[in-house]
Amino acid sequence: MGEPFVCVPVKPFAPVIEVDWLTGTVRLDERHLVRSTADAAACATGASIAAGLGHDLVVVAVAGPRSVDVLLTVLAEGAHRAVRVVVGDEDVDDAHPESQWPSDVVAGALAELCDGASVVVCGEASGDRASGTVPSRLAQRLGVPQGLGLREATLDDGRVLGVRRLDAGRRERLSLEAPCVISVGPAAAAPTRAPLRRVLDLAAGRGAVAERRVPAPPGARRGDPAGTVLGPYRPRASDLAAPVERDPVRRAIEVAGTLSRRDPPELVRCDPEDAAVAILERLERWGMR
Image 1: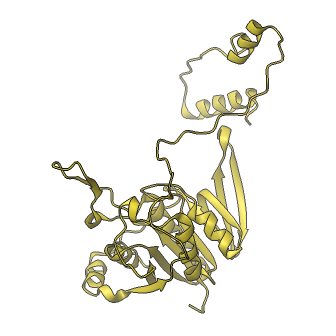
Image 2: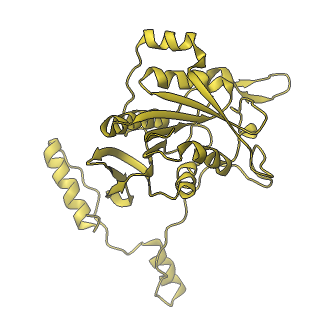
Image 3: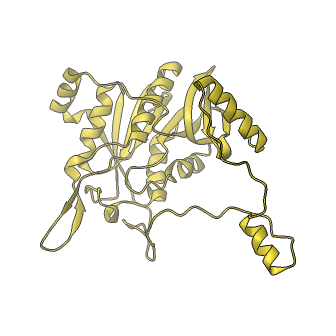
């Protein structure tokens, strides 16, 4: 891969769960591996950027043999090359989280394939664990700028222009010079439907997907590190100023915000244009615009 190219790493996952009713064992069915909506948007965004730069579009997956069908789908949509990366000597399907490599190992394997890429486009999060840490780790290993969680990504005069959503309804506009790593959400772009004839032709010749073996880092193990606790996502608490009242009752009232002045609920019936104006006025009154 000496020529410049645009790389799109994908992470196939299995949304179908099988349960053994005798033992109670739950496992993911590798036969139903698909790509997430974020990865599909990344493929479409990468294709658009590659066409604008005049570079090849290369799709990479650190996954087992059953992920070939997912890579063939991306090839049918117009990608030039597809590479399946095998970490270590054991080539097994890793749909179950206990058999997957940690994010840092995946980023290291992708770094060897993405070295020399003009732009790397990733999905903002995978479909299983959804940690979203691989793009940032990959950018650190490549030593290039990163733009994560983009809702829009376009190419303008060789630079990647992105829009990222912030808190309080704000937007952040980024301008990244290649080479760079970006991650996009599901709404960034819609993939082009692959022609049926091309899908069947590629399915008949599965050798279209290249294979690359990468040695596993010393001491790396599949699955979560020992002591990892899995559970629902709980956002961090907001930073609030400490109360200034000395009386305990007044302090509790201040923390609860009981006596603070707030806008009363208001029901507005109007056209979409007038509703947009009313929303902007309310945001400006709250200091969010």
